[in-house]
Amino acid sequence: MCGIVGYFGPQAPKNILLSGLKKLEYRGYDSAGVAIHNAGEFKVYRAAGKLAELEEKVSKVDFDGRIGIGHTRWATHGLPTERNAHPHKVNGVSLVQNGIIENYAELKKELIANGAQFTSETDTEVVTHLIAQALADSADLMAAIQKVIPKLRGAYAILVVSENEPDTILAFKAGPPLILGQGDGEVFLASDVQAFVEQTNRVVYLDDFEIVKVKGPTFTFYDQFGVEISKPVEVVDISVATSDKKGFKHYMLKEMFEQPRAVANALNPYIDVETKSIDVSRLGLDGAATEIEALKALQGAERIYIVACGTSYYAGLYAKYLIEQLVRIPVDVDVASEFRYRDPVLDKKSFALFISQSGETADTLAALRLAKDNGLTTMSLCNTKRSTIDRESNLHLYMNSGIEVGVASTKAFLSTLAVLNTLSIYLAESRNQINADERAQLVEALLSLPSLMEGVLSYDSFFNQAAETLKNYKGFLYLGRGHNFPIAMEGALKMKELAYLHAEGYPAGEMKHGPLALVDSQMVAVVICPKDKYYDKTISNLEEAKARGGVIFSIGTGQDEELEAMSEHYLSIPESHWMLSGLLSVIPVQLLAYHVADRLGHDVDQPRNLAKSVTVE
Ligand code: M6R
Image (cartoon, rainbow, N blue to C red; front, side):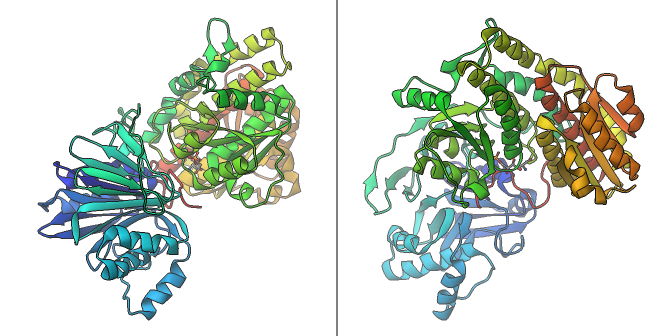
């Protein structure tokens, strides 16, 4: 993960770099640093902890240079200490990296054998030494980098400056994203357009193994052989992430409360409200011949693979229930890190969907490339437009949920589920599994979702109060059946990542096959039990947990006296179409985790050890 930024221009580099790093803090926030030119050298400042520590450290420092690089870290090699923070500097070469150099240990051994002295435990310092060493031979930064790149194995995006060429930044990548922004007489480099989109919307996305040399306000691109290439400057339509919590205590709370609007925005591009139909031309197509072919491949697919990580994986699991039920085609759902390495048997008549909020998750991207290499037609469902996964897929769906700042995904998840519902209905109709009337009914149900969600959000204070006692339990078992099973998994993930409490999601029917042994008076069973076809079975599973002393927190439909009587805490979601109960159960599990974590005093927006965009495998 990590976020990197670079700048050359007339503005004070310190301010540009720090404001860029603030926007990139979602990528890692355990330490940060900058190298800025001043009085003939690149001065490095680093600090352990959040960016605020670095800001404090450089607040009174003035730099006379117009150029610098910066980094916000999510530790991979070495503790999150100041000496492991980037930039690393060796003999006038300063460098920041987002990524992992897999063969760093053997490279380090060779360097040490040749007399190099290391001051950190990072893989990044190894690259810095290699470039410094190569520079000793050629004195040309570009030539030095070209000599070093073939030695590196791994996934990385790197910015490097050298005191020999004080007006130059060299940037290169293999894997994680790197974008150049062209201003007027100034150049920006960053892991995400958000770092500089307030300054310019003219951008160039680097491709793997390309190098860009920023020299003063000009820049030149080279391919991996050092041959100059031309790349178009694109104008992107990306809104600036707001740093306003709008009166909420945390971004996450604000984002949960934004969910009705986010879901409406997610549905809007795909649904014609008048005719209650789903407009094919809006499924991310622009009418290009290849995209029309891709759409045909989707409609005719004999199997669908859905691949994602974390919360996006649970969204994929949810889609399996829905697509198989409505469309009657088999759906395989994989965690991307497994899919990419398990040598899957992929039939060309199948279709592959990749879900990623960030659009940059390394494993999901690798899985997408694997599917394409195997001749599959691909579709992505991303929140970040023009992200790598979005750019590399054949068809494109969008969550449209706006910037999500909280590291724990909330509104992007619900928006994803809404879009997956739309896709399922579209496929069901196009494959004659439902008729126009049935489609209109399903679409109508979907359109009622935002207002039903408002109702669930109004129970916020109920969760706040319940959290006061629930925060004291040793663990949580989340139980659900059917399309509520993935929601149980998501609920458990939220509790783990926010409250740091042990939580597991299970299909309710699995309890007696092992997890029941965990149940005692210190274990909370969070049971999602809407009045659907599984109701009686789930109630029996709940009885089993209760009989063993478990504390029951249940989420049911409307007035359910039976369920309420069995539960220490009962939360009612509104009566609704069967398709919506999973979506409506999401908000309760989010609010529960949020309030427990908040009452435990945790940093809800930036949970420990995590980052929002996972660009390393
Ligand atoms: O950006 P992506 O959707 O590809 O991210 C996948 C996971 O890293 C992400 O969902 C993660 O699990 C979140 N922390 C969940 O809240």
